[in-house]
Amino acid sequence: MLREITIGQYYPSNSILHRLDARVKIIGALLFIVCLFVFHNPAGYALSTLFLISMITVSKVPVFYIFRGIKPLVYLLLLTVIFNLFLVPGKYIVSWWIFHISAEGVRMAVVMALRLIYLIFGTSLLTFTTTPNNMTDALESLLKPLQAVKVPVHEIAMMMSIALRFIPILLEETDKIMKAQTARGADFESGNLIKKIKSLIPVLVPLFVSAFRRANDLALAMEARCYTGGKGRTKMKPLQYQRRDYLAFLFFCVYLGMMILTKIADVKIPIRL
Amino acid sequence: MLLSLKNVDYYYGKDTVYEVQALKQVSADFAENEFVGLIGHTGSGKSTFLQLLNGLEKPYSGEVLFHGKNIWDRDFNRKQLRAGVGLVFQYPEHQLFEADVISDVCFGPRNFGLSEEEARNRALWALDLVGLEKRFHQSSPFELSGGQKRRAAIAGVIASKPEVLVMDEPTAGLDPKGKKEILDMLSALRRQEKCTIILVSHSMEEVAEYVDRIMVFDAGSIVFDDQKEKVFSHIEELERIQLAAPQVCYILRALKQKGFAVDTGAITLEAAKETILEAVKNRSHA
Ligand SMILES: Nc1ncnc2c1ncn2[C@@H]1O[C@H](COP(=O)(O)OP(=O)(O)OP(=O)(O)O)[C@@H](O)[C@H]1O
Ligand SMILES: [Mg+2]
Image (cartoon, rainbow over all chains, first blue to last red; front, top):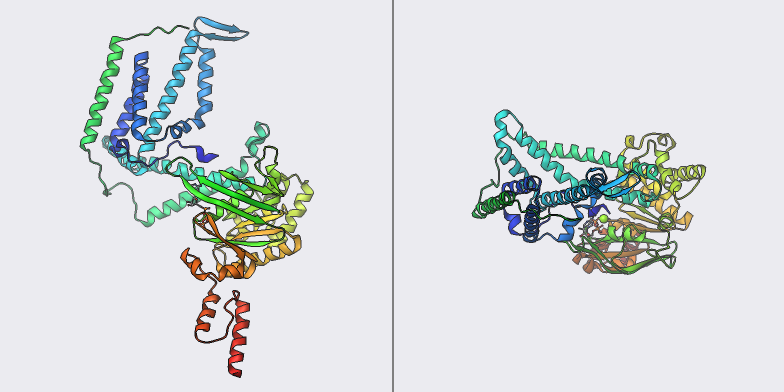
């Protein structure tokens, strides 16, 4: 059941996207997200879609695997759509009792849903193709300038990567505990909301206990290997830009350029409802 | 037949790079009041097999039958199945959650529809059986020692009085005395309640001593399923799949090679002692 959740996990493969420098991928994902929110014209969305589809194809990650990533966020998505659908004022096209749906609302709902889904796809593509280790190194390297203002960059990067690494571990643990309690007759599906929440106690208590135990073990293991933070720490595999990374940067520049063009040309396709 | 599996295939992570076929065309039958041992190298699919027995995992193909009924039929009550087939996971002590031991043991019986009082009586009975003394009943499960936690967790499953009790390495990480106590308790339970016990173990001595029938797993298939004496006569085959026979088997073999007339079919310490004494006696007479 929980094994289905794929968000934030790494999917091993040897695609060009996997081999790219993690810093390039982080910058690319950021660029994609920024463009998604800045250039909201139809041509911009078309371009984003094209970009996303080509990246997914290149990454060799199975499409159904990426789609699973949305699963835990379905409710958030639904909520966004509903709020936009009913609360955006404009020229009403459907009115019933206190509910009004405007053309603007429909447009906003679609746009917001699209943005959210693309956002999830874009970021999960980043984690699918980047190992937690590489992600930490890349974050540390990208955030390095902040060290000048005394931000503990290494520690933040380490924490983030540990958090990422713990997602699958805790999911697996939850799965195991849920199974064990199911074997003792626990029921997580039926009953009203209160009953459902109550039925989670037998899972949450052991889960917290085990999370603390694991955190403690990890801290001990790190200390046993003389980890004292980032100071003076060297890397076994220092990040180094390759030719393909420069090509990727070039590709991003072209992408950004085209995005700006859509804005300037403002190719507006009138949406008729 | 009480519980059977027919041509079951099971995959983890089907259609991804993580795909592993954990079980390949596995079939097995369990009758009433049997004591079966499951052995196999790590990763051979034993734990997966156990989870199919009480419907925690759904087979990719093939069927699981309890009292002749397919447990994945639409109208089959799988909750009731779990009352009938009790599963104790590996390291069950990690699943304790209640404020005190006795409430935790009551959790199962209560879920299976017993009244508060009945559940309590069952819990007291189960705790007594696993040998957890009265003074621990009201303490928090998190204050107990590892072995005591294990007992409390096992009691939590036994309290439902399952017809089939399935245990995944219940003795892992216990001291020798604790191991023996748990296994003796299982034997007693089987005699008293006439239930079937399925036990996974990595100790050949344990299996040789306690169970009647052994199933040997290798890479997702069952390679032997027979009386324990017969299974342990295949020492070479067992070694090829990184298992072994009980230590006494090797001693008896060595003695035989030295010319002692011992019965190499003995697999328990007691039987080995007898045949060795017998052989020594005969030799000194000759
Ligand atoms: N949750 C899971 N996700 C993916 N693969 C799994 C999972 N659980 C088990 N496997 C794989 O399935 C195979 C069988 O595992 P299983 O746990 O049944 O072995 P086992 O015989 O119980 O081993 P052990 O003696 O170490 O407990 C192994 O190859 C294992 O890697
Ligand atoms: Mg196992």
